[in-house]
Image (cartoon, rainbow, N blue to C red; front, top):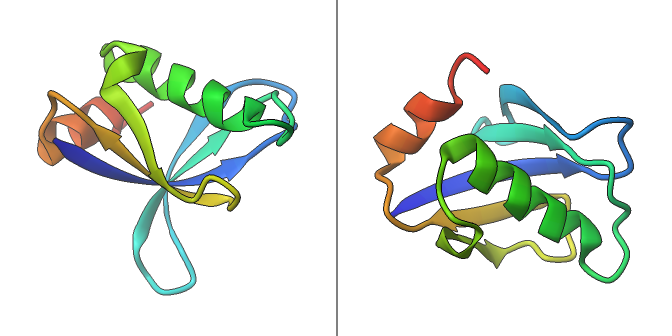
Length: 92
């Protein structure tokens, strides 16, 4: 099981993963943009779909653990180790 910290930007022109960055406290976060607006969970659903597709796992394996109303979120990826998830996301 992998924990994946994400900084989400909704309302972008295209769905994409911008790569790794650090937050204000120096912790690594994955910067992600989605076209969906933050209305009725649409942006969160688009995030889950994009991450699942990118990692090659089913959508049911990606769970929004916290941050449903925030731009900073924590996703849990079932079936992947943290090292494997980061390896698949590095160099996108």
